[in-house]
Length: 266
Image 1 (tube, rainbow, N blue to C red):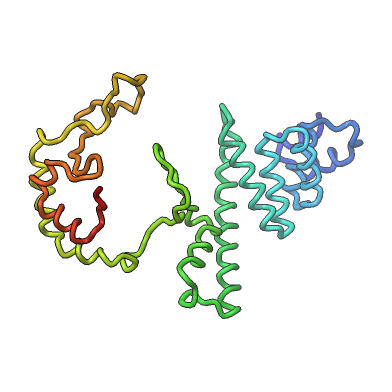
Image 2 (image 1 turned 60 degrees about the vertical axis):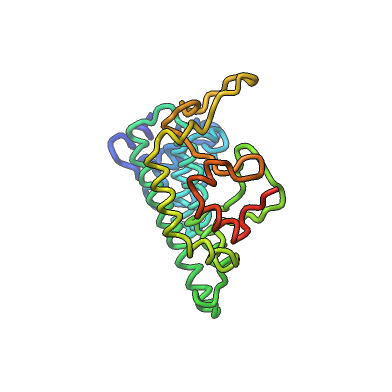
């Protein structure tokens, strides 16, 4: 095929002229992809966009077409569209069983291009906020976090319990110490608490595997941690009260937590 031969020898201008002259009904998906490539390479973003859309419609899992579509959007100053198509290309490339060498460089370029667009968006958003009088020092912690999530530098923190889900708890990543009046009581006992922990750690016999098999339940694979002494614990509370080990080995810890009323015993 003349268009393919022109692309092989690097003459993208000739390839575009040849492929653009073919009747649409006679175009194959491969020809549309070559047309998109040659149009993009010769600074014809509108034609590249239209041809890439043809390929994406026929082959929605083809990452190369998404990259060309993103390049065309960027050339047309549609940065939002370009970022979205680069993201789609990367997602589709990530599930390929085998990535051709020729596509790997394009994927790397798409990653770089998307990072540049995201950085540009963040800078533009920041400049817009400052121009409207919303400087960094005037933003609440929650609003600042929302911007970080929007920019992709932070993630939404949701409960992900593995065993017990308690509904209605705030979906917060961190709490401030000032929100709890008992923190200073615990902090005042820090030296004693550390000493008790260090003493206990030195006694390996005091620890037992944290995960143990229940003979009345089906055996579960827990990544080799079940009945594993390398993954051990020393339990301080059980059935709503301090254990004997806690009272014997951690008297300062028990006193500090009791005084702070952090542990509510039955």
